[in-house]
Image (cartoon, rainbow, N blue to C red; front, top):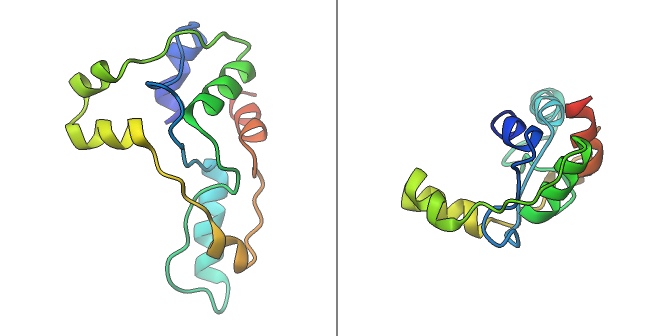
Length: 127
C-alpha cells in the first residue's frame, strides 16, 4: 500500500479516502514477515493470527502521520465516487467502510512488534 501512495503524497497530493473516519488495519512489512516466522517456529502456536499492528487507526490518522513523515501536506481527500469508478463495488466498499481488526491472539501468544505504532512504522519506511 505504501508503494502506491508514495508518489501522490510526495507530490503533496495525498489525503484521506472519503471521510477518512473508516478504520484502517495496518502492519509494517517487517513485522508481518517476523509474525509468519514466529507462527511457524514457536511451539504451541496454531490457528489464525491477525497480521495487524496493535494500534487501531483511521484512514485520516494514517494520512496525517504518513504525510508528516514525508514532510508534505495532506490536503486532497479522495472522493468515494472516484473509488467507485476505479475499483469494483466490493473493493470500494471495503476501502471506504474499513474494518476494526485487533491482534488479540497474536499478542496473547507472545509476539512482539518492532513497529507497534503508525508513527514509528511510517518514519522507518520513509527514512
